[in-house]
Amino acid sequence: MKGGEAIIKALKDNGVDTIFGYPGGQLIPFYDMLYDADLNHILVRHEQCAAHAAEGYARASGKVGVCLATSGPGATNLVTGVANAYMDSSPIIAITGQVPSHLIGNDAFQEADIIGITMPITKHAYQIKDANYIPSIIKSAFEISASGRPGPIIVDVPKEVQEVELSDYIEDAIKTPGYNPTLKGNKNQIKKVVKMIKQAKKPIILAGGGVIIANAEEELKHFAELINAPVCTTLMGKGAINENDELAIGMLGMHGREVANQSVNKCDLLIAIGCRFSDRTTGKLEEFIPNSKVIHIDIDPAEIGKNVDVDIPVVGDAKIILSSINKELEGYSNSQSNWLDGIIKFKKSAIPRVSYDDVPLKPQQVIKEIAQAINEDTIITTDVGLHQMWAAHFLDIAKPRKFISSGGLGTMGFGFPAAIGAKVACPENPVVSIVGDGGFLMVAQELATIKEHDIPVIIPILNNRKLGMVYQWQNLLYNQRLSHTDLGNSPDFVKLAESFGINAVRIDKTGETEKAISKAVKDNESLLLDIVIKKDEFIPMFPPGAGIEEILGEYKYESDVNDD
Image 1 (cartoon, rainbow, N blue to C red):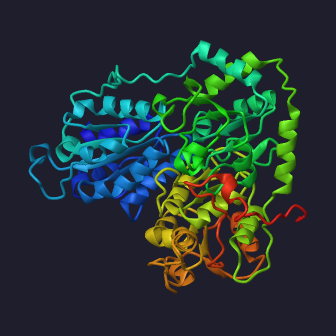
Image 2: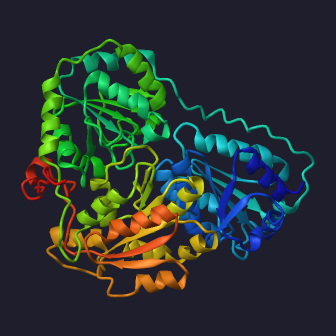
Image 3: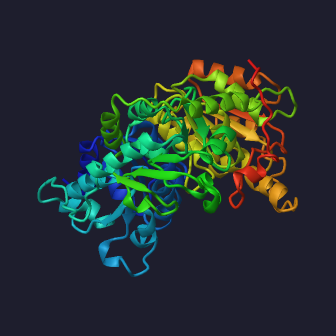
């Protein structure tokens, strides 16, 4: 067995059925061996999209995603996708070709030190010098990537290592004595948590992406019911609780729901689970939860106390810890119902308006129609920008792993290739990729990928001919000095899609979005929608550096309580 064949076997032994990649000079030996392998390979049209597709696959399925690129520019094109996966704790393996070992360090053609380049944005990295270590390194890479706080792994393989014969196929995971993530929470800390919860009069739960990663949504729901507490989420935590549930009060933060932002700043106990307290969640730290105690549950001890001072830290897996806390709380009844009743009443009074007959269409209306056209099993991916926040703000997600967005890195171009990975991972689920015109133009070539591989993805483009989020900030915070955020009037997205053989329609009237998406979902076919939206409709914003109370008056919601 040659090195490349060992990689293929090791991938299959670790449950891989699909890889996303792009060939190149230093990967020709591997691709030659892949020719005869029964491993599904999706040929993307840009290596960055291979990494994003692998992440979409991982986040939709809960399995490790795999991407592949050649040395030098191929490997460096993966870097943005690897960094995105690192920031959002997504388990992916990025296999890169490398120049032959004897040329490493000589500035050989298409050589790049991908290990050095990605050191700050990977959980671990390997450069294989001996083909006999391939099975063990691949096995270890999967274990490290998926365990503890998940993250990306680089496996760099010089060309001759792919071609050399193994003396034997031995799969013994490489020992990593320095890597031993804590899963079970400290018993004493859990008892302190329970005591503090029983003393609280106004508790709130903040659920982050760690709840979804740990598959802890049932334990979270039970916990919230036991302590009679509302649940808000981070962007990455959308779907950790059914957002139609009475206890759910929506996303917290700069572009979050008014009820979540107001309520959190008035709580006396914040129980944060699997989140990292990013600046987009907290705003100005000095004014965030000024009168509240904080319990922080996280599998990564580095996140606890990093941004927000914590009264009780608990390190471990969210599912295991919540199960332990729930066990301790069995029989407990929180009599402080006025707090929750008041929040539920406020939530109903502050439902944002979503129904408009305006032309050009308002994005609220578009998101409403998308919501009406899909079901709770539909996977939504988003790109980054105003459309992302419209989707996060207005869509109520009922299940985990059904809302996939770039959180920490904020990568334009993420949404469409992530949708490709999600659809490959979950072919029975409809996949809708909500994108902006700016971000979509960065990855539009992947229309060829979905056509060639028959991957039905629905792509609503919220087209305002602007770089929307920067345009909003320039309008509201930079005295309307609109510097280079106008994208002009090209291209014609309908003609662009049709040139790739993808069905497309232009939407400019109320009701057309719902009708088009409903048909595409029913027919399980790819469809691009060029939806012309109002350019000056801005998402409610609570900018960092300002207290929520100071600016609520300026960005008041229009109530839509009585809208069917």
